[in-house]
Each structure stands twice: as C-alpha cells, then as structure tokens.
Image (cartoon, rainbow, N blue to C red; front, side, top):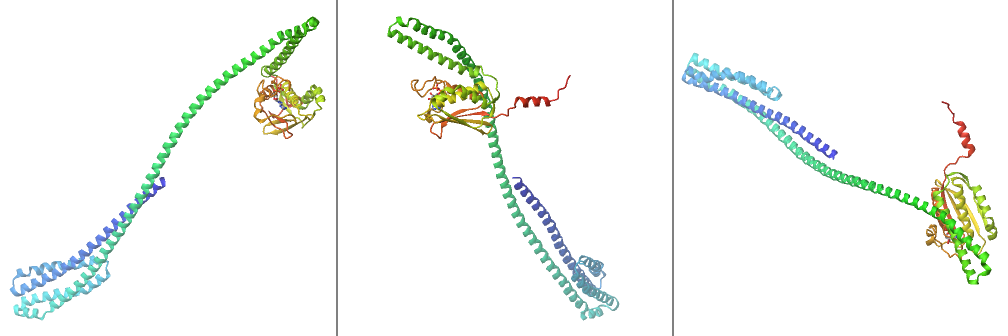
Length: 479
Ligand code: ADP
C-alpha cells in the first residue's frame, strides 16, 4: 500500500517537473517566435523608411515644396536607428549579420542617391533633377535592398517554422507523457486504494478475532474458577468420605469381632447340644462374620492410603522387594512360582505403601495363575521423567474391555468360589500410585497373561551420607 502511494506520489512529482519544464520550454519557444516577428517587423520598417524617403524625395523634386520633404526627413531620422536595431536583434544569427553587411552599403548608396537628387533639384532645377531620376540609380539600389530584405525575411520565416514545429513537438511529447504518467498514477493510486481496503478489512477481522479471544479468555477463566471451586468442593467431600469410611470400618471392627468370637464360642460350647441344622447355621454365621472382617479390614487399608499415608522418603526398592518376597514365601513355594526382576531403583516413596503395591501385584499374579506354575518377571525402565515398572505374568490374563473396570473398588471378574478376594486390592494399588504422582494400567503380556504397569516419578534421591556430606559443606555462621 505504502509502495503504491509512494510510486503514485513519485509520478505526480515527475508530472509536475515535466509540466514546469514544458512551460519553461514553451516560454522560450514563444519568445523566439516573438523575436522572429520583431525582426520581420523591423525589416518591414526599414523598407518602409526607404520607400517613404524615396516618395518624399520624388514629391519634392516634382513640387519643389519643402513640405513634400517631410516623409523623406522622417524616414532619414529613423532608418539608421532601425538598421542598428536590426543588427542588434540578429546578433545571434551569423547568416542574418552577413546579409545585413551586404544590405547596409545599398541602403547607404540609396540614401546618398536620394540626397544627391534633392541637391540637384535645389541647385539645377526640376529638369536636371528629373533627368537624374530617369537614370534610375536609386531604383537599382532599391531592387538590391528589396532582394536583401526579402532574403532576410525568408531566413526569419524559416527559423519561425522550425521554432514553431519544435515548440509543437515538445508540447505533443509532454502531453503524451503527462497523460501516460497520469494514467499510471491513477492505476497505482487505485492499487493503493485496493490494498488500503484490504488492510482495513484485515484490521477489522483481527480486531474481531481479538475481541472474540478476549471474550473466550474471560469465559475460560470464569469456567476455570468455577471448576477449581468444584474441585475444591470435591476434594472436601472426598476427604469427608474417606474419613467417614475410615471411622466406619474402624468402629465396625470391634462389634464384628464380638459377633464372630461369640458365635464361635457358641459353636464350641454348645455344639454337641445342637442339632445339625443349628450347627450349619452357626457355621454360616461364623463364615459371614469372618468375610465381613476381611472386607472391613481391606476397606480400612483402602481408606488408610489417603488418610494415614506416611511422608515420602528415599526408598531402596530392592530391600522392599526382598521383604515382600519373604512375606509371600509360603504361597510362592506352594505355587512353585518363579520370580525374576531387573535391578530395582531407589525412589522417593512411602515404603509401607510401595511394599503393599508390590505385594498386591505379586499376590494377584500368583492367585490368577493358569495351569502352569506362575512365571513372573518385573522389568524397570526409565520413561521420560518417570520410572516404569511392569509386572508380567503367565496367568489367566484379562480381556481388554475389563482393563479399566478392575481398578474400581469391589469390581471383580470372578466369583469368590473360583478365586477368593474382596475386589479392593487393585483399587488400593491405583490409590497408592496416584498418591505418588504416577499412573497404573494393565495390558496383555507377551507370555499370554497380563502385564500390570505403573509409573513413579524419577526424582533425584540423596542418601543419608550424601545429605550429611552436603550439610557439612554448608558453612554455619553463628550470630
Ligand atoms: P481381588 O484380587 O480381591 O479379586 P483385585 O482388586 O486385586 O481384587 O483384582 C480385581 C480383579 O482383577 C480380580 O478379581 C481379577 O479378576 C482381576 N485380576 C487382578 N490381577 C490379575 C492378574 N494378575 N491376572 C488376571 N486377572 C487379574
């Protein structure tokens, strides 16, 4: 747009300069044409002077009256001045100067002849003067003068023609250039106007987008504020619920223990006094109470993860894993399970919870075994800023459509008669992993079973010695 306006402005300036130059040129051309007219006029005046002088002289010779000499005297008084004007006017033209050089002697001779005749008329009378006139010397000079002036006129006419043509040609050229440049300027101005229009439209559009953005940002921040308020509410109600679950399951334990132990006492003391049906009913009651105890204890474990977790600290996974293997020693031996693992890292964790996570996953891998003895492999790798643990087993596997469901509390894929359990173990695992800032999921294992994977942030962890050394390095200033 700026380029277009700039070009249009440059063209306008060019047209202005051109017009000015043309005006100056035309002025000069006109001055020359005028000058030519002046020269021609002067030539005519000189000729008229000479004719007047001759007419005056003739009148005097015929009438002998002094008054007849007036045109002669008048012409004589001006002719020299006019001739010298002529010389000055044609000073720039060598041809005319040469013609004037040739003309002047004839003028002088002509005037001398006229003067001679007047003197003869005065001295010798009319007849002698008439005789002199009849000789025709002055007429001969006059012929030369006419021819000379005619030549000079022709030269001036020729110059006038050239100058007029030159002036017209330059006018024509300038007109063409002005018209062309004007058209170009109009085109560039038009283009600049189009660009300006586009820029305006663009600006309006970006203004509109900016307004929409501001509106969107406002709505997003309003929505974010609402969401964070909802999140806080949710957090509060979660904490309340957790507290409630903890208190409820904790407080339920005691009456339940009483129900179970007194029912067992009843069976023990009065078993022989009861009939078979009564003993069977008591067995059911004991079984129900025991199951409820397990359920409540699992529920308590679950609610403890959030409510009673220890702070995270430097945890040697290898030590933790060894302890878990020890506590699972019996079922490992019974099932003939083979467990292998990669070198285990040191992480920042709640050791009790991380141990429970390892234990739940290992116990499940053994519990949900297939026909073959369980083969469990634990791989550990760094994935971005996390450690990724994968527990591969060769068990019964999990259909992909149940992959999410199994991490929800009380969700089980089998009946208790097939596989015992409460359906809380994986929910606890998920809660523990999330508390440590990771995520957990299940995928099919290449060996046909399942692979339970979870991540845990790989933060740099200092040993106690490193910490002590660092503390020693910090200079302590006493105040
Ligand atoms: P529970 O073991 O008490 O049933 P969990 O929460 O530990 O409860 O497991 C939920 C369900 O996920 C189990 O009932 C089982 O169907 C399935 N599951 C868990 N671990 C495995 C595994 N390693 N292989 C196959 N299925 C499993």
